[in-house]
Length: 456
Image (cartoon, rainbow, N blue to C red; front, side, top):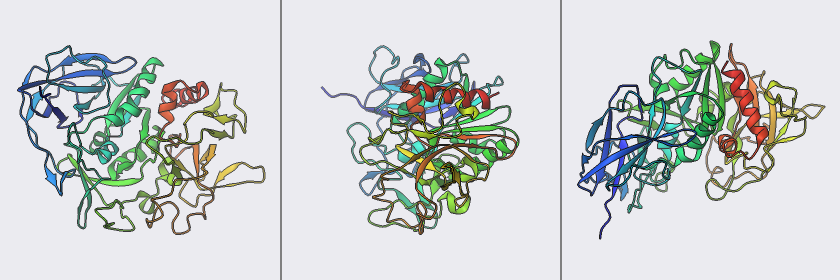
């Protein structure tokens, strides 16, 4: 007996209250529905669509792979979320069997997508940005029974003179969100923090999105940023808003949104076949406008660890300095202690600032890489060894050509104040994962200190 296959995606990943969404699906079943589960302290079933007519549609193919650059244009169905849905992140389970609706089933796997329900007129103080551009860059789109997926990293499509193109309208699962966002959103809600959510595209498109918020959160792996996102975030901080980068590899690649907000192009150094189309890559942010000027740190002074994702790595944590800073209030930490020791906090990718040590041994930014002069380094985790297998081929990465001139590479936690606002950076992708796990109460306290201070 054959098993019906289903995959799907949304026409847009976020929706305002009362706004309809477009559900796109391909299935071998005669009918299907979508079950929605709100991700919070506990996954809660929110409702389902009616049964919808099923239709099987092929993936667009190119060179034997699913084409990651085009809208897959699967049959569409309209659904309007009920008015009583709370703002938040909703997992969508595409179902073909007449069984009980999904109520907190596994988020990993195929036949799943996610939907952000944005806030209405009533807003909280904190806006949590889901890193959707990065999710799409890594999405291979290789569903059940289909092993020939492609992404910006695997068999990408390169448009001469423009860059690598990635469409948002493809199936592919929500493993990214399952690893970073779902656990951290659960921790936030259990800890009493009410947050609103948005996607990268929301921040890219809406000049007034940040109005009324006190704190913007960047969480997990936040690698791909448009110029509009940077401009709006910079203006937000200049005018008194605050940002917490509980993320790593942040703002590494510049993207240009195309096709009416359904795709982006980024001229990266990703290989197409056996060819690197353009080196040095024009869309690295740091030669254009160093990401350090916003975040305080950069991936070129950090690193990543080898092994399977998320990989194993040293578990030394950050060596603390300036322990009397408000970030460490109530932790009992002293200079030289380790924050996150014994946990996989540092990595799997992390960012750093060029630094030197003064006569007392304190790490201080040199500013050679664009890190602001007022950036206070609160924690250092020097990376030994650094995974560098595939970067040595690429002109423009790290500190090339004199990449050791800025000092050792290290994950660099710190804080600075560009304008009237404050920016905190945790400088590592797995900060939210370790916090959500409960493995380090002191890291939880630091996170609470950051959220409490910067959201009020």
